[in-house]
Length: 553
Image 1 (cartoon, rainbow, N blue to C red):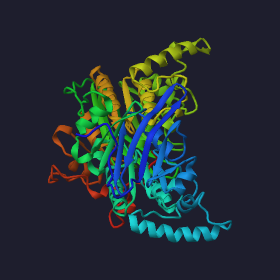
Image 2: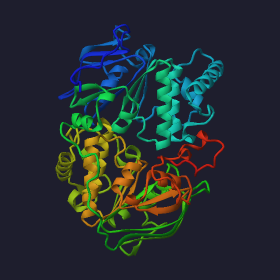
Image 3: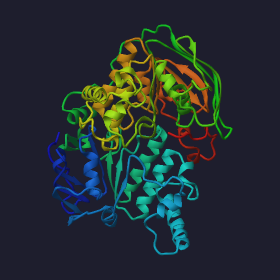
Image 4: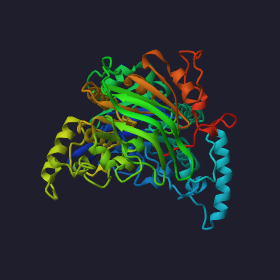
């Protein structure tokens, strides 16, 4: 295996990108140290590394968000000073961020031309953009309704808008930061077809991801970063997931969940005929019934938008505003209030329910607050954090320092605001806060979204440890591999209903995929079948039955 240097491009063609000796520090933290990277034209180049390894910082330098302390950038063989994002765009560089940069109440078309208007009169700009958008959508399979507002689009379609926005600005180099972190399997597959098409057209793609399967599937070359340094660049065909994981973390990593058979005890959560109608009179949860026992992990599989999000939020005390809820929920044999003043999240926590929400930024953290403040978020009235009517800031800081150390949050600075941590480290803060409360029931949504391979191993281990300590865990994830490897039982949701229950040891992704598409007769489903095409957004398959309306992540 080749290692230690940048990938090589054909001698007759200048590389699309060359980074030479790039270094960048933020105070005492050195995010990038003497980075060398070469990306060949017309290739898909992966960049992997643990959270905080410096990947996003390096790409932000390339896109003009940060200025390097030292080093040189060359585009198509020519040195360039990228002072801001407009300079990068003029150089043919586009970037799709992990958290999209779209104006949510603007239409697709308005977002596409925002900042790229070609005159003082908006109407002609919109007309020209509409024509060009239609051409790009047909050429690259990026169909999306130009007149829909961003709020009306699924996450997968919002990502298409970001890609279209970059192509509209004539990007030849496209950087994607964790592009599949919020996509269903079918949406991810569609994205890969798009990226392959872009590469075939001569575009250069840089893919930042934690998912080794995706690296092996789609990239030509992969570079590995660890603690701010570039430790290897290799041909994807000449490496393996095990080698890459070891390069990322600096040690051997267990790529499969290590857990013993469950020893279920008494029911902790009992749900009977639960129904929820939202403020638009759409029934999001339709007669759901299930149990979770002490000492087991129950996973819920399903395409995003089929009621899992609403179920998790309802159980956690975050029902949608104006929602009508009926049915029965019992925790440790005692009923939970579904509609009164004791149905809120604080009451749920006091009853022994921990909740890691699906959206860590909007629901799990206060982004402008420091890490130590976020560790106490939701638990600030507990005796260990309060001194009479006052918060015991010293106790909270000490507790935060312990959690940051135990969960290897980087950088290990409790004074940093949550927004200054990478997405994976933000997730560690939320998981540490909820898991270490030792809840009777842990509700956990998308536990490893945007998290690196080492942290995935750690988070999975902590979830299993909680189960083995006799606690109940309800897991919601769009990652079928995660559902099947962590769960002791799998429930499948479609259109707000439970379509079936399966033993993960005796089922397949194909069988679960059929249930996720609303097909209940799975007796003759091929055991090795992949997830069926119905997994996509209804707009991808206009002639097929549609799933439930898209929910918010």
